[in-house]
Image (cartoon, rainbow, N blue to C red):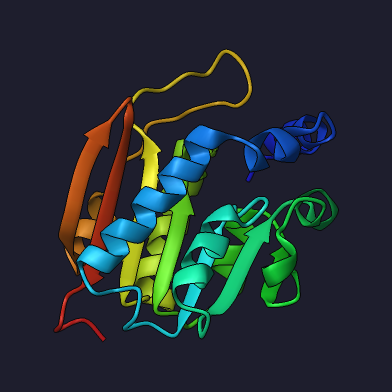
Length: 197
């Protein structure tokens, strides 16, 4: 991940970015929708662990945990301190938090989890980085399920930057269970193909 992009996000976080995200009614509705999708396909109660890349204030992890309090929660973001200011008390001590940029995380570490989440996160990373991340996730991490919500329309003139990405590498190893487009964002749930180890 480029040093320049990381520094831009660090500066952006200093301006109460996580506060705005944690209090957004629209984003809370998005979290509720993600839970409903996972329940619709009997994923939420069949898994034991979940990893959210770019989890921020861990709102999505909180909503999943409320429905399945037995989940092992992993989350990552650039600045732990900014995120933990707004993480709900009920999960603050339950999250295994990794403070690292997404590219380094996916290439240097390997988390064996049942569900991988990237919600409104990958759109903020450049094209090459996202291809590397997705390649590492499907090739090394190999989660049973992948749930991504991301932009269908790009914007590069200001932060938060939005890039539109190619997810065909996931389609090679996973089957789409759910796919919807709404308000310039797609939500897609994949299940690992049975013949993939």
